[in-house]
Length: 307
Image (cartoon, rainbow, N blue to C red; front, side):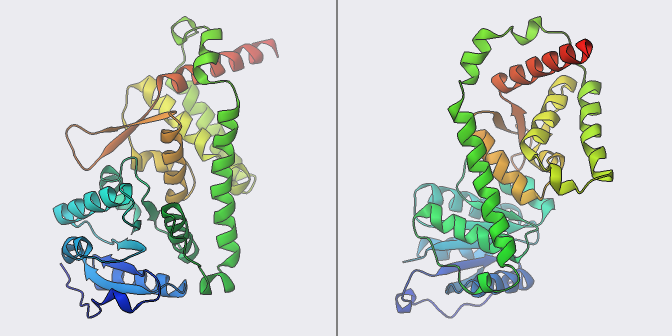
């Protein structure tokens, strides 16, 4: 494990709570500090993953902790993620975890139902936006200044719109009759015509074909893509880890995780820890979502038969 020096222990000299950086390598540390400094936010210290737990536990004042991970840190990383998850839940500070896509599963396994912002393979704008969102949720919103004046400004606006779309979608779901009340008015899934995994796979293939003829961004609908993937897995009696579901969403992994967390909070998806691997989490449809999807396909088949 690389050791990263730190000679700034006196946090009281800063005019506002700064950010502590913990990184898995020198390259990771450099990337994290470049992002944070570009936003105009001060850095309290820079430590390795192995040193981070002790530093966090004696930290006097910090607006956020930034974990930059570019390799699997094993048990020390797991322990640090568990600590950060607990502290963020208790409102001690905000946190951002930045990592490559191959580390999605072990990271998410330690951050279940968490307010920690996760950035996967993120560009500068995504990383800056994650910091702004994390600190805003924590109630210590930081002014993201310098980066908004460069070429990333448009990307930041797009990311803000993305978060707004998720919130609007969930708000619309809240404004319609509950799934439970609709279910009471519709036949239970067991009375519907059988639905095959091949049917769902055909729908997914048809959705992917659109990208051959039109810009893929026109049809980005990660929530629906994840619903279809989980329904296909349910019918085939397969388990879907978080990393696979993010791939099925056909959007950047950071966006997919944001949607996933929102849909879990909404009760449409259920996350379950892998009993055989503590570093992996599976996702499945809630019974209500499964029933609604099956009734939807029954109605679609009925409409197609009429046509």
